[in-house]
Image (cartoon, rainbow, N blue to C red):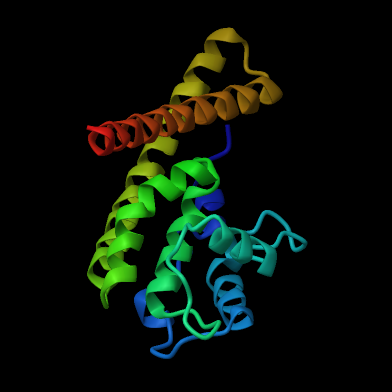
Length: 190
């Protein structure tokens, strides 16, 4: 089986809005969308895919996934929260995301809360996750190749087996995140 390492490099898994990429002035919605299109362009599956749209952002606002805007402008904190929402939305429901971010939004709405230290920690952890993912992907590729040698090396089956393995791993992480969220909900209800 061919090595997937070039696939990892091509995807540029470290696509993210870095703290230094976020202007120190408040942004209008079109500027936020452009910032995300630039920051996540390499992670698009194809050229037609949109990273973020006005409708998405407006739905996040209506769903109270982030605290209210001032003068229709998005602060640095809003951009950081939208980045978190962007990452979470492929795994968690909108209601789950709202529950995860409720405490942060409450504090941000009540006072001038600087999310930069939290967001910087998040980016640091992401970097470690990428390194772990690359090693785990390589391990899974090797295991799939080994199993397929036993079964009679058929390239299509090998790819299907690797895809199934990756999806399973993804589901394990999703379930772990949901268990943590359920624990948060239990503490709030107590």
